[in-house]
Length: 259
Ligand code: PGA
Image (cartoon, rainbow, N blue to C red; front, side, top):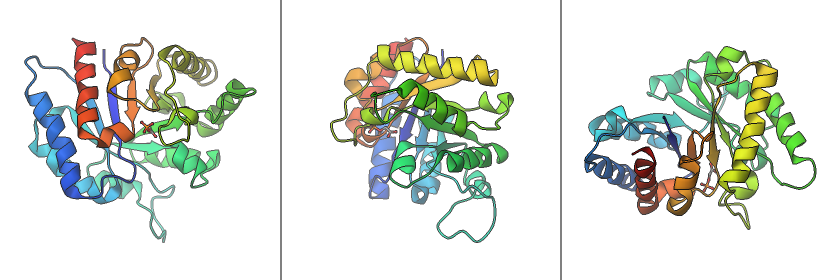
């Protein structure tokens, strides 16, 4: 049983020293384990820390357990695009995963489904692994229809073989810790939404074995219920992933779940 723990550092930490602290605490924790576990840890730092994090992973006990991800990608591979970072550049920096469709980019930075779809194609074209975030803003009205439409538009014209490569992260916007009044989803209700996602991917895209994770206010005190749930392949963590105590606490819950 493989469970992913994806860290989305967003626009944190402020300094390289703090980035080092997060990783060295995780490294010390993994080193101290009596039994070997096989965590699938993915770190998605801001672009400016990619090289540093890559170097730290190579020097640590996490060498075989952790991989590097980016939080965004340019939709095109070349051209004059001030501020953008291309797929070939990410590849050259040792990046293996790329987040696309995060709700903050969708709702705060105005990325429409069509842009997310272009970025998803850029990730695939560059041989990287997409982490595709989807999730409804509210549970009012026909939210299931809304979520289904978002999924269809996000995955438009993507072949089944490529959908199979994607890690889908179900992240209801109302559950993300920075949303005012946020509260985590429950494994039952998240499980229901994830089931809806799986059914759509299977019925409409021919992928019956998609990888689907949950994200939204995951912390040490609720990580175990999500990590232990059948049908949830792991968690995407935001805020708690840059708080060393909380992050190591979540790793501890992963170890308990896997042992
Ligand atoms: P959170 O963020 O864990 O702070 O709720 C999750 C995310 O935005 O990916």
